[in-house]
Length: 176
Image 1: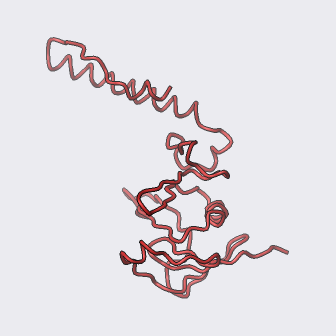
Image 2 (image 1 turned 45 degrees about the vertical axis):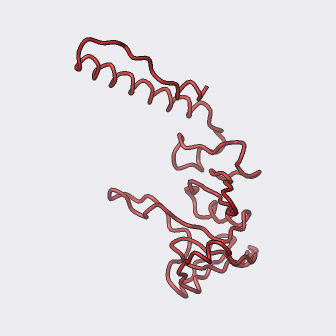
Image 3 (image 1 turned 90 degrees about the vertical axis):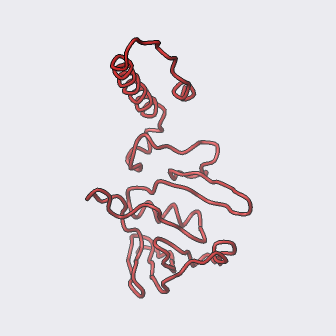
């Protein structure tokens, strides 16, 4: 089980620093491989095409009833949903519209080490609009987050506050 992977490793009582370093390197590599293999085995394979990383999985006890790679977290008077965003923009919108969050805060940069890390899911410029398969989003107000906004977010089913502190109006569109 996953619990076995977090148990301390016994001290091998080796004779030299070099032996210990070699042992440590071998043991760490083995533990990393075990963790990776176990995560691969325990994942729900039906979601393989929806996860950016196969070894970052949600805890089953606090994930939503429908699939999204994330968990509900409560702290004091705050409620959060923490997630690794889906790979696909439409998938992201479908799942986020089911959750109806008051705010979405992106903590990852768009680019990391010269590689695209995060897909652009919403308009980021005032009055810019994006058309998606079933949704339309219009960035209509650049939003400066303050402490009072965090404590008392404004909630309305047609409005979410989203990436990079941009307020977005979203409406579902039916396809012909």
